[in-house]
Each structure stands twice: as C-alpha cells, then as structure tokens.
Image 1 (spheres, rainbow, N blue to C red):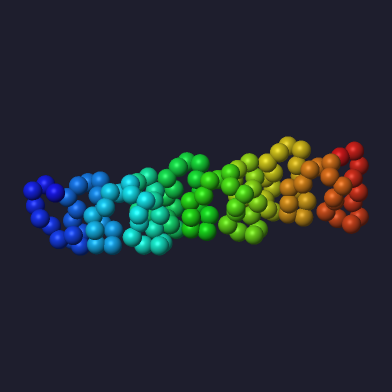
Image 2 (image 1 turned 180 degrees about the vertical axis):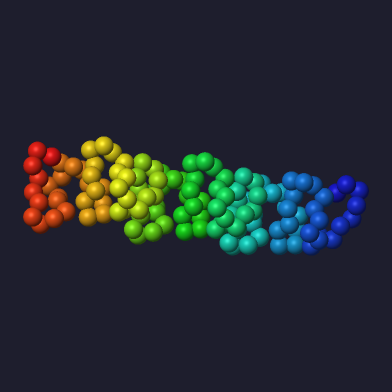
Length: 123
C-alpha cells in the first residue's frame, strides 16, 4: 500500500484502481458494490440512476443501464423502436411500412384503423 499503513475505513485507498466499499479498499472492477443503489459502470461503482452508462449500446431504464435493444422499456407509454425506447405517440416509427395508429406503430397494411370511420384501402 505504497509503504503506508492507512485505516481500512479511510477514504484514502493506496492504489488508483481501488475504491472504498463498505469500509474496505476493493478493486474498482470488482462486481461488489457497497450500496444496493450502486452498479458497476466501466469498473467503477456509480449510482444506478446516473445518466452515465458504461456501454454505448446501453441506455437508462428506470435507473438501470439496460441494453437499448432490450424489450424492457421504463415507461408504459414507451415502446421499442429500432432498439430505442420512444414515446408510443411519437411520430417516429421504426419501419417505413409502419404508421402511427392511436399512439402505436402498426403495419400500414394492418386491418386495424385508428378511427371507426376509417377502413383500409390498398394498405
């Protein structure tokens, strides 16, 4: 520990790759995080609600970094759209053959029409 004796509960850790964890200096890439609200992120324990996610393919989802192509979206009004959780009423639909229909992206040739006075006609 750089030739010095330091209190194990001290905020000071000898190695730059070590961080405090429940009063012990543990390797920052360890899977062990001190607090249940902290998660590993590029080898550091960071608050799970942090905007910082380790991987570019990960996005925040109810305070957790989840794979952006995950089927899990944080909010019930959000739906997957080309691997991103977007507001279901957004004008943005993932596929060119999909159109908005009562706040959902549905296949434009779908029999489902938003309005009761509308019917499908050649897609």
